[in-house]
Picture 1 (cartoon, rainbow, N blue to C red):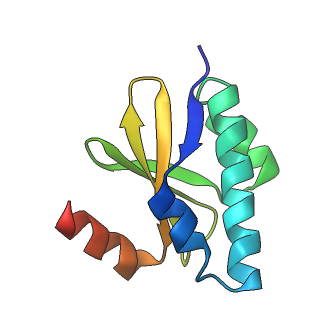
Picture 2: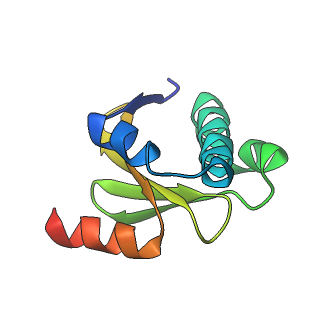
Length: 100
């Protein structure tokens, strides 16, 4: 069963502060995530869309995805659902994890 991607209100708020270049990068990450989830977590398929795509577990239940080192998306795992909770840089991700 393919995984589903959802967007939290906090994720939508974090998108509002991004500039146009960052929004484009976030869109590419989201597209690669959709491919990754729709192909039952096939990293090779996602890398066809974005060659530098990565997806890794930070700590349960949080994961991180990105296509470049400066902008990342934090996702929370809930059974077959993946919920995007934040888009930001490394420092923003660290602050988020310190507060949850």
